[in-house]
Length: 149
Image (cartoon, rainbow, N blue to C red):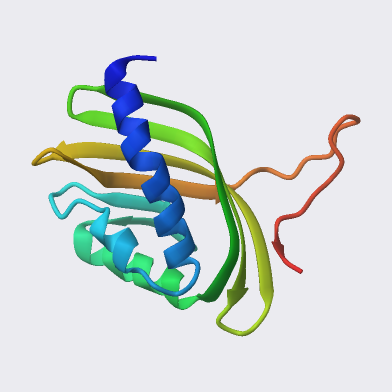
């Protein structure tokens, strides 16, 4: 692992966990602070097909945060990452248990890919794609369905 990648992950992974807990507890502030305001920015998933441009991305972040009130458990499992110059990406699994705004317990596991751009020495998210993994039963992997209990 390169020193550049190690430095990026040392800075970003704790932030990933903090912002994940915050947004799934209904507070979007740390999550919105992690995003670039410089175009282009985009989101795939999060209950929408796609959103591009900061105003639409911000609206999506606020909608997601407004869907939750309490994050009881959050974990991020990094699968792979890379840094090249002022661009980086991470791919991993985001798992959380939270209370929805309607009081239901929600357990989710999302496949998440994020792209980052270094701006003024700080890494900012410029793209996020988060979705549920395909649910397929195989002999060695029983059927599991993510979502509300």
